[in-house]
Image 1 (cartoon, helix red, strand yellow):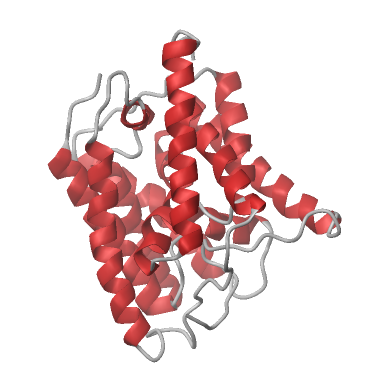
Image 2 (cartoon, chains in turn brown, blue; image 1 turned 30 degrees about the horizontal axis):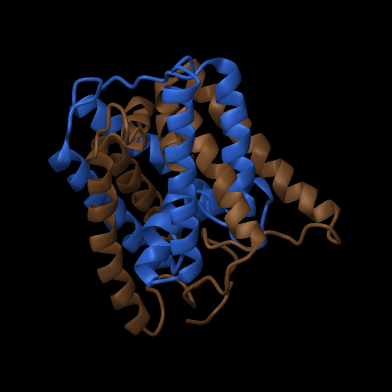
Length: 156
Length: 142
């Protein structure tokens, strides 16, 4: 049942990415090109998504537990730090260069486009590099704290 | 040039939001793609099946919509070398920064999380600056 719910969420998410044209790198790069061929469409993606998630988060915060799990895995990290801001800056540069972020890149895999495949392979390598690099040198780089779905913790 | 598509993009945004809420209310999980992907790559503790199912659903849903729209085309303008570099930056950066457009931009801002608001401002500004340099300083060769 948990797997069915996760699959359904993934399918709807992917459908939304395609319908919104977040999956089209040209569209994303034009959104980011404020002083050129600016296409503000993708601001509507964020607006539409936030309208629903803001309401959904409000509901979830008042629920005692999720329907199919024990607890809500709310992120626990607090405060701004160099990892958050530096990592986000690196991500933004890559996003601008390719016009792809993680969700749309994975959603595009059904196209079997060589460029998309190259990007996804490099992206997975980048994920592994950071995850395993920080595990190997714990003194220099603390393990990733994620807002993005892990780890499970109760709070907020 | 791409056409201004506020209705399709806004509707797509509603679907993205609905998917994130579905995952939150059923599994209690944040629909952050980079976090879920990182969990699979690093084999994070806990059940793995839901992560794989969610990620597998992404191309499935996109495929269905693309077919309904008569095989929508995408334009990947970057060269292979740039795509590899960009992929590495996106993969590494989202793990270091604990999230991407979905986890920070869509889910985190909805919670009013300061970290997510800051991260979103930073990656948006970095994206604007990168495309500006690429197209208006470097001459649009990328």
